[in-house]
Length: 248
Ligand code: SF4
Ligand code: SF4
Image (tube, rainbow, N blue to C red; front, side, top):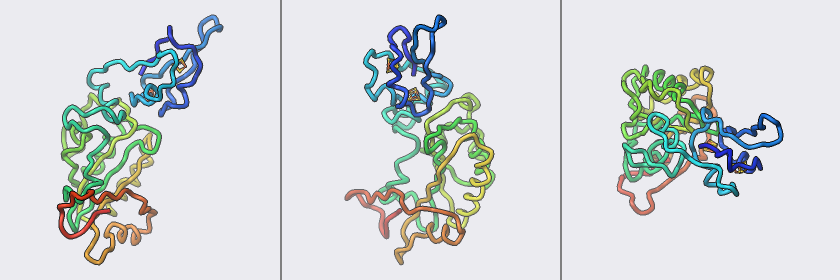
């Protein structure tokens, strides 16, 4: 995002809408005029400031960016589609619709690290560190996920070096793991947290067992790690075609 200094009147109305705090006041050399400017390195091209419709002079504008800057918008702007997957957003929808796709079967967990969430954003350089640490455990990264598409080596977790300086509002590393590896993956993520210049949240998805218990919840209780049931549950709204239970 950029601000046309010739149109901006420095009212500051757009600043509270910036997800990254990247809109700053700039004083003119003579000190008699103020306008706003976007720190483009910190801006993730989420478009929220512009979509808020708050700018009375239409000074905010989104330039068309080429590769690799273009990935900021595709991960951060919910209205932008990934060219490869034609899906908007940061990960795949299936984490919330397992009842339709059946991606996560009994004995397995879907796991995701939502990098940059809540509210800080994440550089691809930090996301690569997590990919690399997880790759050492031999986890299976989701092939339809747009972040996985940026890997040049799925065995080592190495990302395309051209994207490493790019920053996004958030992006989701998705993986499929056997239930007995959940704690090992959590430990890797916990150890990584100190090394990253961002935050992340972890999602765990599993199918409900025959006895109505949630296998991942049992694992979390046993591990003594904090967790919350307050996740999304999507039962497929009449399109259920996976037999034998629902996911949570
Ligand atoms: S709302 Fe528009 S005019 Fe006001 S500071 Fe932001 S860009 Fe400038
Ligand atoms: S596009 Fe997003 S990050 Fe960039 S200035 Fe606007 S609100 Fe801030």
